[in-house]
Each structure stands twice: as C-alpha cells, then as structure tokens.
Image (cartoon, rainbow over all chains, first blue to last red; front, side, top):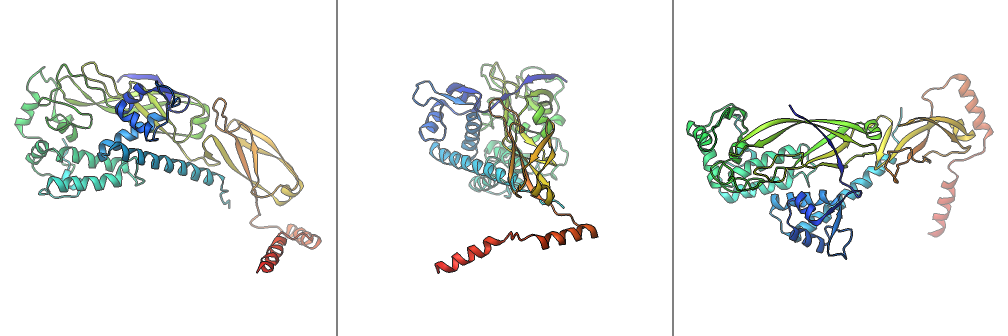
Length: 108
Length: 330
C-alpha cells in the first residue's frame, strides 16, 4: 500500500484563491460564481478589481453551493439564499458554542 | 456483490412513476442532505438515497437494476452472465476483473446513461480515450484531541477510494495518507490536500481530499474558536481573602493570583494560553465558581456558625432595593 506524505493547506483567510481556482475546486462555473458574488453570497477580497481573489474559506462555501445546486437542482438565486441562510446558521452555531463554553459545569 | 434495495431506500414501490421517484428523492434529500441536515447519520443516509436515485431516475439504469431480480438487502448475488461479458468486452483484457470486488453503485456508475455524480462516462462502461475526466473530491472528518490540536500532529488517514481504469471500470483501492496538521487547528476547520483525492482519467485534474477537523471533548477545557474555558472552583475563604492557585494549561501548570473579593462567575483571563495561531492566539479563561463542601466537620460547622453571627453582610440586599423601586413605579 502506498503511503503518501503531504502538507495540509488551511481553508481560511490565510489562503487566497483566484476565481479560476475557486471554479476548479468547487465544480461551479466562473459565470455561476460571478452570479453568486453579484447576489452577495460570496465576497471577493478585492470586489473593485476585475481580477477577483477570494479567501480560501470561500472554497468551503462554493463546494457546498455546488453540491446543493446539483442535489436540489437549484437556480443561482435560490442558491444564494440558501448560502446566506447556511452562513447565518453557522454563525449562530459558533455563538451557541461560545455561550456553552462560557457556562460553568456543575461539579459534584 | 451485495444487493441493495434502491426502492426501499427511497421508500417507494417498484411500480412508482418517475415523478413519484423524484418526489421521494427530493423529500429525503431535504431531510438528509449533509449541508442542511442535523439528523444523525445524515451523510450515510443521504448517500444511500442519492445512490438509489442515481440509478432509478435513469430509465436505462432502472431497467438494468430491475433485471437483476430481487434479493434481501446485503445478500450476496451475481449479476446475470451476460453482464460480466459486457463488462469484460472491448479494450484491454480485463485481467483480474471480478464483480465480487464491486459495489452495486460502481456497477451502475459504469453503465451508459444519464450523467453520474461526476458526469461520467459515455460508451458502454468505457471512458472515451480522448475525454479528460477530473478525479473525484473526497471529504473526511478527522477527530483529534485538544492536546493534538495544541501541539500539532501527524494525521494518518486510512481511506478507500474508488479508482477507475481507462476502460471505466472501478475498483476500491486502499490509500494511506499522512498529513501534517500544524499547531492551533480548532473545531470545524477545514484543510485541503490538493490532488490527493480520486485519480483523474486521461490526464484530467486529480481530485482533492478535504479534511474536516473535529475536536474530542476535553475533561477540563471547553473550546470556543481558539479560546479555552476552564471552571475554577474556589473555597469561600479563598475568594474572600485572595490566594494563589495552580491552573492547568495545555502548556503546563501556571500560577494565578486570586485577588481578595473575587466573585463567582468572574472570568480570569490568561492571555495567549489558548490554541495558538500566529497573530491570533487564543486565551484561556478561568471561570470562578464558589465551591461548597458536601459535608463539614463539627469544628468547621462551629466556625461557619460563628461567622454567620459575626457578619452583617446580606448577599440579597438588592432584592429589597429592587422590590421597593418596582413598587414605587406602580
């Protein structure tokens, strides 16, 4: 069995990807990604530039978008709404985790 | 090969119309889709449902599936002899090819018909030699301890990937990856191993492997992002008089000064003692709790009684003030 040693790359704001790379990683077309940006579901780091770049965490959102699009046959508009809701759910879950972490546990 | 009941997976019977199959899929997909579902085993359930739908939505694949006959789910069976011939036909000699090693889903993925999950594969189970097909991406969850997250770790992943040969036939191939996880990873973070997913066909792009990090619960520390929270129980006299206590951290024990008059619920911050990240180190918060002994000796009881007589402090004084002001406004 072949053993493969490899360096993992973080999917967070430390990494930057181009529109082309984002399309390649997610399976969405560049046009679909542009639509998602226009609809506010994805945010480039440099919205005013003609050559967009994105934080690597966008790969996670774009991949989810790609799965949802194909599994539910969603159009871009619906996809943008779903992505915004998912983002809110995620923020609330993080907030809930923070609140739980701050709650003292009862010790016997 | 093990039989799977695709109709049961979608909760429809064999006579269901294409429309009803679609409806059943959509309902179950909404319930179990891993991106939206909080159901237990959502991923596995969705995989079952989408595998069933991939075959049953396509008239040709559905007919082929029906042709297999009916078995108990999980029962070993062999496709009809002409199927083996079909899979063995054309191209290179199918040395070592056997249905036994195949999963039912792989069998149907190789059939001509509607696009599979990766838009594969024209031509009677054989990829066209001039068409580049990208490798499949895979996602796995890796569970690590908080200590491993703090120090960084070498993750060993034993995975089984389906791999296609140039004839479009699939085999499950075991692969082992060692991935270096740098210090400071936290719950819910994702990592990408570029090119470590499924192999591409005809020179396409290899798929990627995505790792979702999940932290095991820790007996002492609770995690929020890169901050850690620790309950710090103090005896009443320690909180009143102040003291100095030893606090466990992920990098060893540190001594913390407790000021006189420390209150229950106060968060005492130990800067940069959380999970590391350059420029954004997490902090450790010790949450003060006033602990009360479950039982006391006669001597202790006597001292508490003396204290209660000597003290004029009323911890509920604000009840009176608040009640009076409330009454005053009405």
